[in-house]
Image 1 (cartoon, rainbow, N blue to C red):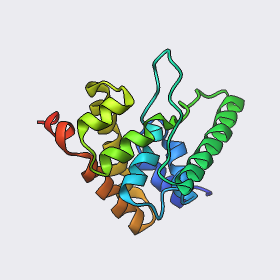
Image 2: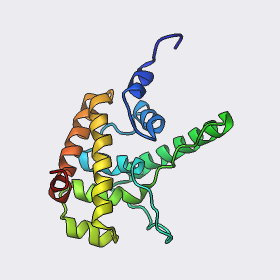
Image 3: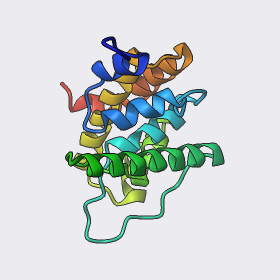
Image 4: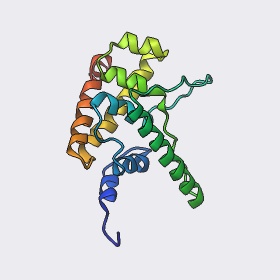
Length: 171
């Protein structure tokens, strides 16, 4: 705004991720507010996971209709951002992917590693790598989210994810 950063600009300057514009717009629109830590972990996972198998991804699962509605809002923002990037001749951001929502939710809610990985046919290495990336984004949200309750939920989600094989792989 003029020559000073807006609140969203301040948040963006402290957010480091390939989907930073999309994440900050989600924050600005309150899409991560009023969520329990496991649901927040699931929703934020759309920014870190990318389905790479030649097989089509499984149908996404959401912990509630409200979480699905927020995912749809994120997808809409992503499409609008994609159009703006394309029109401006910029490189395009990677589209968010809801394939990992159920996995992140289950792990953050305390389910066991074997149950989470086996049910979703995911390799242990992919699970750990993606979960560490998710923890990184959640820790950033714990620092930059405008709402205190959202910062707290993000911090608790990151802590809930950092257990078992994920924490063991960091030592």
